[in-house]
Image 1 (cartoon, helix red, strand yellow):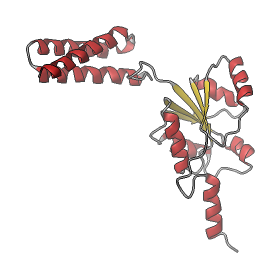
Image 2 (cartoon, rainbow, N blue to C red):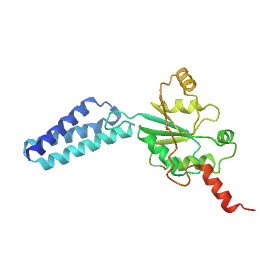
Image 3 (cartoon, helix red, strand yellow):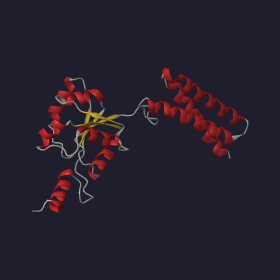
Image 4 (tube, rainbow, N blue to C red):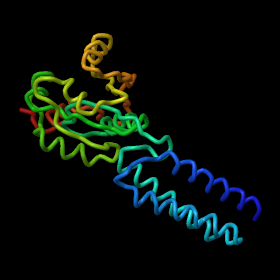
Length: 222
């Protein structure tokens, strides 16, 4: 029991330390409630009721974590890094999911979904799904914190909207990183650029082109 008690003491001290550093006035009532639960945990621990102390401190942590998450802060580090991702995301396949999963390991993922006319210009064909449909699908992916339609004329405006700590590039996104960094710095954006080294090919179809080619070969034979 003494080792459990020591752990609860450490838990309470950690919560007190976190509470002393947080300053989000609009959520002060919830923060005060978390502080009250922390004090209750100490009270019950002093009375020898370790079980109730654990419940109270767990409530306190849950309340504080919720406030931090709502305010886009990471409960573990105090603030989560923002990760910017851009792409067409036309026919969603496992390759897209792996890409977004990798991005999510770096922080909260914000996705700029390419506009129809920009996608057509880059890929040389119209996307199968229009921009609103592609956006809706991307928003539903568990690794995506937020998604929005990109700027039609200036890609970096989408980056400015997020003000990311990290820009995560896919293996097929060919960007001159030095020039890109210079342009970002001109706009006051000092983001780390991370490139996924290679496509994850664990499946038969890990690209939209592969899926389209398969459909054509199966159903469009003359």
